[in-house]
Structures are given as structure tokens and as C-alpha cells.
Image (cartoon, rainbow, N blue to C red; front, side):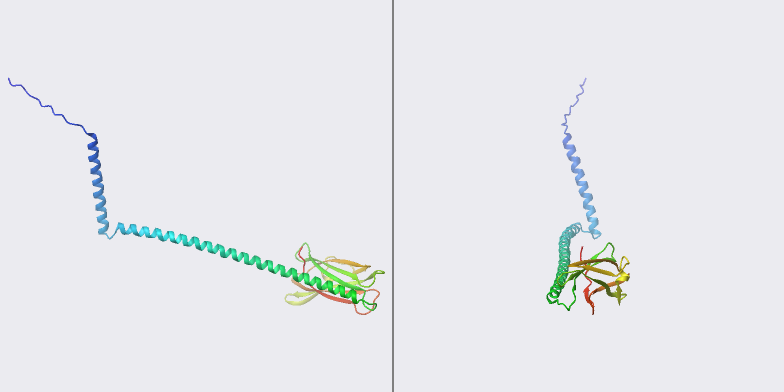
Length: 241
């Protein structure tokens, strides 16, 4: 009776090799798909390499434009700073010139005052207008006029009299004058003075709407003197507070 013989086959199990083969297959498949995709795009007139080069050139141009933009912004800031500085310098120069002009006008008034003292005689007036000061009030149309009177002769007794003020300027671009009676903030009697050495006369005024003053006329009449009164004209210069 024949005996049945069975063959034993021994196989080596290699799980890593199978995974590697699957990986190679996937990579080849993906490469084939991408290659077909590129071939299709080339057939349609699209070149990925050229597109990549164009994108790189565009990025470079954008970087250059950004740098140029930053440089232009810096130049603009410097120009604006220079303009501001120039305006500030011009404003400062204008203010300095105005202050110097005020000082010159003040010195001219002082010089006239001392000349009057030196040249005073018995036949001349015994009062001089030493200074007229204009100070802003509590509103744009309100001001305070201060007139300083001094006695030029030997102060042996009081000197008295009256004083009138008149404003001259433009109203609606036409010449206009306003006596103190029309611009005085507080209506009252005419301005009177009586002093031995000097006196400050303060008078608050309110300017009419639309009136731009340019001159202040001051007239002084001494009580014990005959003849023409003392009259002087001063520029309208408002002092800074």
C-alpha cells in the first residue's frame, strides 16, 4: 500500500518589503499623474517653470517697490518737518520784528517825553502825553486804553484839565472816527485829570462791530492855560498779555 507524501513549504514573511513595494507603487502613480497633468498644461500653453520664474520676478519687484515706497515716505516726512520748521522760524522772526518795532515806538515816545522836559519853558504847556498803552479786554471787541500824563515844568503845584480821546480807522473799508463818548464801556463825565507829577488814566472801551481802529488821537487841555490844546496821535498797537 503506497504511502502519501506531503511537502512542507517554508516561506519567509517580510512585512517591510510589502510596505516598500506599496510605497514605490504610490510614488510612481503620483509621479505619472503629475507628469500627465504637466503634459496637459503644457499642451494648453501653460509652463510651470516660466510661471515660477515670473512669480519670483514679481516678488523681487514687489520688494523693490516696497523699499522705494519706504524711501519716498521718509523723504516726505523730512520735507514736512522742514516746512513746519520753516513756518515756525518765520513766525518767530515775525514776532521778534513786531517786538522790536514796539520797542522802537516806545523809545521814540520816551525820547519825545524827555525832549519836552528839556525844551519846556514858561510859555509852553505844562503837561506832556508820555505814553498810550492798549491792552486787550475780556472779549475780542473790548480793550483798555491807558494814557500816562506827566508834568514837564517844576512840580510845585497840581496841574488839572480835561482830556478827550478819538479812534480813527476803517469801517466797511471806509474811513471812520469814533469819539470816546461812543466807544466808552461806561458812559460818564468827560475825562478829567489833576496831578502833581504824573497820572495814569485808564478807560475801558468797546469797539463797534466791523470797525478796525488804526490811530488814537489824544487831546489835552490844561485848565489854567489858554491857546491851542496839546494834541498827539498814536498808532493802534495792542500789547500782548
